[in-house]
Length: 238
Image (cartoon, rainbow, N blue to C red):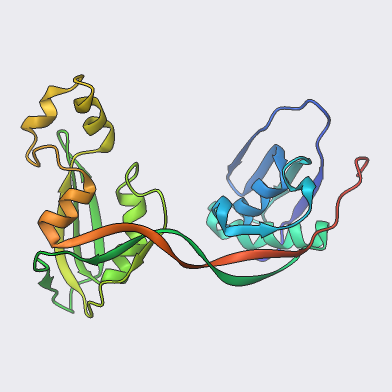
């Protein structure tokens, strides 16, 4: 389905709090700004949205919508996009602009990647342990690793990751690191046990360097950005 069974966006009442729930094929969100609504509907980060009127950050809206069936939110994004387009006569175009990313590159070490058996299913498994995280991948390309690594190494990877290794084919590999909150606690002297972990307290960046021979380098790189062309303001009594 591309349309909600029932869907409405209206201007929030003054003084209301921002809250809401999204579950079971229903969206009930109150006090959301237009900017947050667009980033939610189109799955964007703040810096991937540009242009638009001044009220993008000041006007607040209530969104109440029900899908024809129980669906995960990712399946309802198109419905929410169509609702936004209908209510605000929203139009946009995409263009590439330099944005902060982590570039996945070859390090000074020789890459420690095992050629994969192409008959194996491509998959990565994240397993938390006693003070460590193990991320084991089979039949995985560097482009796939770049796409998945942000959700795997939460707290470390704060920008999109771009594969600039130039490596072709798929590989089997494993990365083991210490969660960033434990590293921070050890730095404050609050968690000396980190030093005895199997990784020796490796950050994700250190682990991917020492264990795979790869590096994650912070830099700017052209990324697709949504540029707002037209957005009609809803009247307060809508």
